Length: 485
Image (cartoon, rainbow, N blue to C red; front, side, top):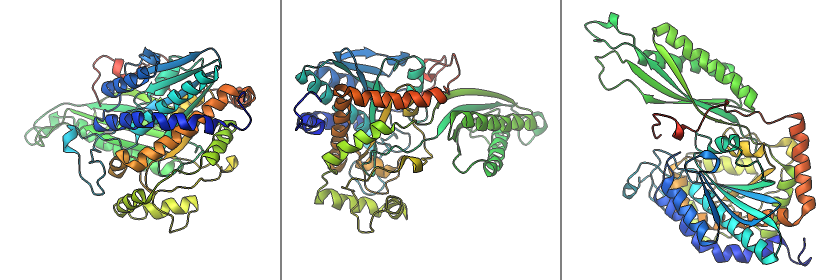
């Protein structure tokens, strides 16, 4: 550190974060108020750009060639430290803010909601970036702070397309966060995934008078699902396959359905294993088409790699979290948390406490600090994140920001309901402080950055990045005939 020995990064950035916090909690709430689905985050992106410009950022639109991505930059020279932010929502999760019962938000004009807390994620990362940039400028030191507004994390892998376009090639290290039900510096292993549309085309006919002349695309889609259900018995416990009907052929039962479409997501611990499992799913689809004499078209939609943790950065992030302490939840937060807990799925709160080794009387909003886990016993998360692809091109660390009550499932109305709460704001601000302190350490401690890069380089030398997106594939929003999700 170039500052006095008694001054830590946490003590340096915390007053700045606290001063800026009201502007960024407002930003988070504004994005919550108008949830936008993947690739359609035009308003959310613009709100973030306006906030960054208020603090003197240089803006680059369409970062990585993606229409709803951007970067905001402060300072100059090396090192370049990146912050990753998101702002996309999820379908079918509209919910009134602050409600402890299921109550869709009719005022929003959409059925979408921030069920993974990306309103908090993006605003928190941007808050951290602005605070870091201000502290760097006040210190008179060289270095570049760059915030990336990243779209379409939910089932689309926006960052993977940005990585493929070289958007992160000059970044020395990256810092990010994710809302959750407790604050932690540990990074769990995530799954690589791919997603694709499976479109079946048949021949329409009168289902009663002339069924022999029809070929049912809906039959093909149903057979594919049956086949994949049998496949699930013969995959690893860590792997996942999900689907949704996006076209069931129409509402007329007396017409042999000429079209049907399924959207599949396939997950596995590594890109190589994911690719192999995906090919097995493709074979099932081809078999379904063969059985029904229908035509099959497959459109690749997106993919991401598994997360590559960086222990060097985790340890520094953890040290900053310990100094910072737990999120300062108050009695009003805990009372709201108890009301939320009453509506959680049965066993969710108890399971969350059990997994974390917490006592049964631990309050709903956890205000402690978890110890850093043994990296050799790192947990396997069966979800996915496109932060994974960034982590394979630059050392990356992610804090879990405690913004929700224990046991709150991601992608749930309960997560949406808590997204504008005072507790969520406190968790976001706390996470932003830890991120900013860690980023400032990277900007001012060459030995830390060198150690993080050395750890990264040693892993990449043995296991290079396996890009999950095929050459030439462009983001869905740039493809002819693109349909919003």
